[in-house]
Length: 417
Image (cartoon, rainbow, N blue to C red; front, side, top):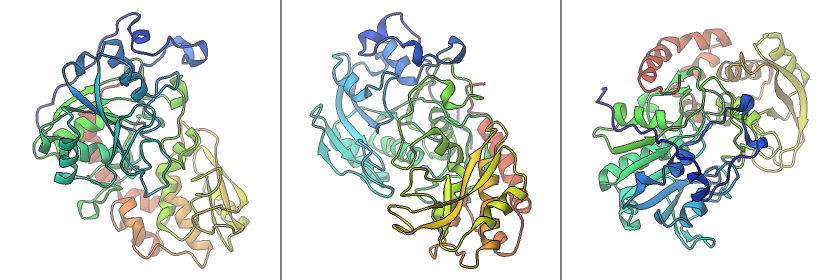
């Protein structure tokens, strides 16, 4: 369905107000290429004197990425500003402070820096999450977390769950936008089938969605929520959807423990598929999702991958010893991904090609017994086609019609052009 759009807010700027909100003017090092400096949703909100939050008890869903360009956390900034009545913080997967590994959170505690109650909302949804919002005493739930552009990165589903719960609890939601770090040029990959919905994919969007969190919030509200929530989106100014994150001049703060760099984000929407196999996806190394491997794999895998001539990328034979997760403490063989031209690199196509070549070359290749690969790809199709001997191009061709349909829906919610 396509309900009428909810309120859309682009907050105007006021000269000097950002400093009054507790942030300083950008240094030359923080200025984007060409002198144009994109401003995040939080920067726009602060420059407008937090007018959108006036008279509201505010709770913020955030993590370590919720920072100003001077890397001061927005919780500290807002808590120190008398114009904001900040009463609660909500922590997603990995927690508010980001200390927990995948599949974990930090629990309920009081933040020692501000004294604010921090509520653990990881894996909470529906009425139980609505009850948490009600118990916290908030009127407005603000969301400010850096996404990485992949359907199975769980923060966007925390956003969806908070929107649904806020509707049940009769709260308002304000989404502060940040760049899609791998650009928002296009959507790539298979679209989730509803029977495979999980916390790594609640609703039918593409594997690499090519949207910002504010654009996704508008899509969620109009397409997926049975009754829309009271939603406001504070959009960025100056961001171009063709730009990678490093063009923004914003600091990179790891959104999760295994997303240390922009390089990780560039490959993640493809190589995270290896979580659904018995190969290491590089967790426990300094290059998660760029290093892939297992015991018994040698140089032939990198050679086979290079022979495919995939655009913008080459592969290097690599050996490594993960410190935790799969093959912890063992030296294993595999490859490292090296992106030469990220403007033509297709992470999802590359991920599928690596699955195909790994299965053909390594006799011990196996999918995880729980078929986690189906949740990651959004259906059983990728797994069954690879098992049947399909090549990378055949697998990619199989999802093109559903991807085209998603792109049409997506187009209605794109703001930055």
